[in-house]
Image (cartoon, rainbow, N blue to C red; front, side, top):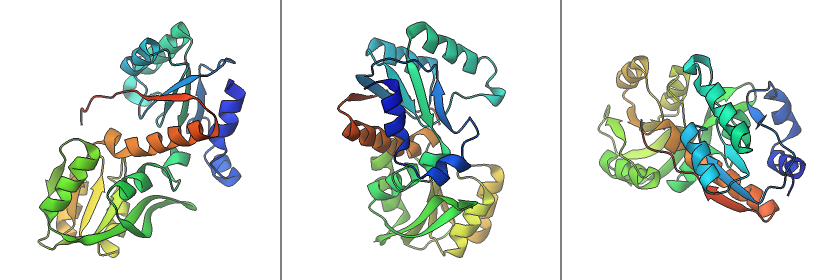
Length: 250
């Protein structure tokens, strides 16, 4: 498929209202747009020099990521990545907040992998939600921790702030360290809260309200969402997809 067809398919899973609300040029779109035939697509959560080099070695024409090229305080990292894309002639397409709010994105994907029954939503922005509340059969915090590690394929950190069995969990994949989301999980009477980032204020508040806090990595709590997205694009057009491997560093 050509690039224009790819864009049409990639955006077809989102409502016009969603795309309009998040259309500020930084939440979804292209870097190094090229009009070319796309036969092989690689996907990952982040775009880095290592990811681009992997894509080059695997003859990938387009890299699909969740995050845009990191900017802000990353100084030359953004420009270095953009220059390498140009050098190799690789297209980059990213989808951040629209994917985060979808029912196939990172949070829902993680809840599904953990076999949770969704009973509510948290972490709201305007009319959009980034988090869920899910229920499972009663189990110890240790048992639930083991389940999370099997899904994420890496060790997680746990702050035990109550001695109840885990039955109700709040999840915000990626950066869910804001106190408002923890507060919502507390109001839902969650036994545990799972996300990919923390701060001192996060941990202090979780302890104060007696909410077990489970910390995975930002990248790997979001990997399931971008994997779902890549497979959905593949289903609409017969292209090869390849997972580009990111190292665990959080």
